[in-house]
Image: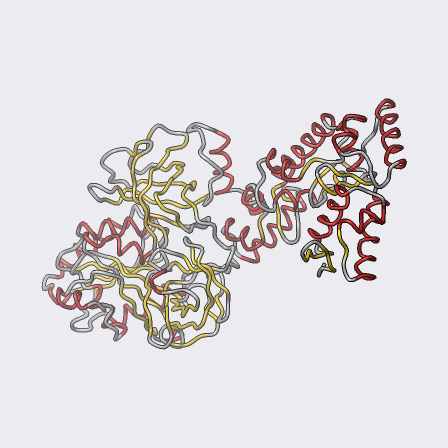
Length: 624
């Protein structure tokens, strides 16, 4: 399915033409009907003659008045082709030129021109002059060579030829690509009694199915697809390119707004900092300066922001350059998204471009050549290089997230991923997640260096606490665990990490102190030295090493037993409960000739494990 959008100056007959072609009035608001002027986006559909008779083509009608240009921008981002409407009695007007520039900047280069209101023209020479003027206006744009068809929505003249030309235009479109993760930029939200929240938009990326779990970004909302419609027909699956109405369960109407993106969970990470290539229009009256305030329009969203120029002092009319944009609010972007830039005051379209890195790794120095080279590679590099660059962030990415960041079709992505693995540009870490080889190498080098330093500084500790390692490396989320699992030379446990060849090794003097201390524990098994006494005798580092080696067991901060003695005390306490129904501190103390301090420590430790439960002064069996 395809979507065609109108474009053109106010009162040049866009909505009238749509109504005549489709039988549907795209002006749905009472104010629009009262003013006889389109204010917001309108939607319709038609079936073209001949081989397209069974195919539904969506139509988005946009406002032409300059005061509503931002509503126009919310609609044209998802169209496949355009019908530029120009009134024959007026010719090219200011909004004609701005709409034409917008189509060109968005890469909408499949179009035709409908020269309307020819019934108001008596002079054939005038009509010929207008056709020449239109051809000249199209020439410097990507719409150069588009068919120009004189029509009259009032009399019907030229409409059959226009319908045929629309069919030919549809035939010329490249196939829609399935990128795996569905993305629906929301351009309208409403409720239907008995059904609930409905969001509409032009589906991009991948398919959407009834029952799918969905996310709405920005916002992190979660819901499910309750139903799908396209052009008033219920569907179980929506394909990329379809105008789609999604009946959402689990999300309230008040939580949704135009500009958000409905997608599969994990498909998009909202961003306020992205890298892009920008082209300015030819009629910009002053250069774009570094750190200028701009208004950016992408999909159905808009946001104020500031633009940082990379590699140049300023951009002039018609020039192309690299930029980094920081927006005032999060946007749900994907690589390859087209956008329009306007200056807020006086409002004017000055350029447009393509998102290259939707989640920029950070703020670059303005003339950092490595950053510019990387962006050029992202834009023009091989698919395998694009996959590697997409995987170069801090976190391993899933297939869905990588596909979304690369902007590659599903089949194209699979081939690129395999090539990037063969070329050792990407490393698989974890189950179905990947990191670039460069980022993986950086993390593994940092892990080895951190552990080696820790082992040298703490030779009597068996390993480095995992959270200490994470903090030192500054690695977030699952990245650390995923990378550690791939490193054969590292042993990673729940609480600590160590190099495989590391072991606690006592010096001769430490070994002598250790043996002497263990002799004291053997001599007084039930009233052994406290932690403080043991540390004074053998050194705290030796005592902690013995604990980590399992030679001593720490029951309480100042109470240590050998594991064998602790096990005996536990068995004895539980046996007393089984024999007598309960155990007290006094009974355990007397049975083993220990002291109250040690008996309390053992029973409180059993309480903490759930093996015993306190009832007054006694303990009974617990649930653990």
